[in-house]
Amino acid sequence: MTRSKAYPKGVAKRDEILHTALDVIARNGYSRTSVRQLAEAVGLTNAGLLHYFESKEHLFAEILRMRDEVDAEAQRSPGTSSLDALVSTARHNAKVPGLVQLYSRLAAEAEDPAHGAHEYFRDRYANLRTSVAASIRQEQEAGAIRRDADPERLARLIIAMADGLQTQWLIDPSFDMAAEISYLISLAAVLPDEQ
Image 1 (cartoon, helix red, strand yellow):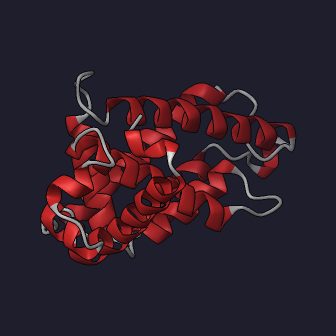
Image 2: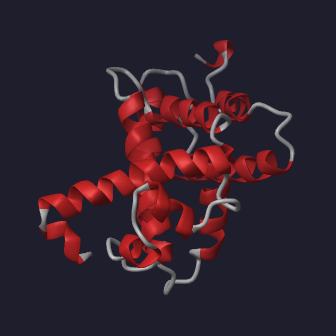
Image 3: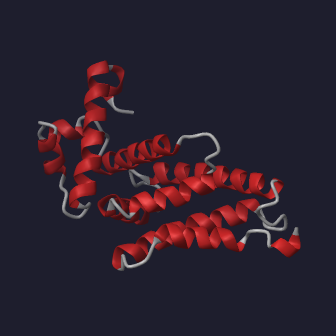
């Protein structure tokens, strides 16, 4: 937790930094964005910017956390399942390759428990698996997904595929990530003769 969280001005500046960073990284890409550029975009020095975060890694994890909040808000509507949200997020991610690059690189680095983004990814995956598995169960109860599919395993596979697709897409953006995720989900669908 940072010192500035206790003060409203500090919270507001931190939010401004995160929203601005989302825009800058989406536009310029992660590899072409420096902490200096982010600091300048919000009228701070490097030290001033990092005052609001424990480290550079924490800053980038918080940028991803903000991205998750923005994406969740955009998808918040009655009847939108976690499966629908995954497909929608993949569709949106194709428009912001810089954020996909940030996510992919930080995820690889964060496997180390000492990394500043480790906790973010650990919690994100746990929450996402729970949410996607719950959506799968709902689809099973509605008769849309095969009942013999294990919701937790299928959730883990769908999430792993989505992350792997992002890496492939960064190298070759000629395919539709959302369509690929939809295709995998459809493989678990109940066929007409199984109903």
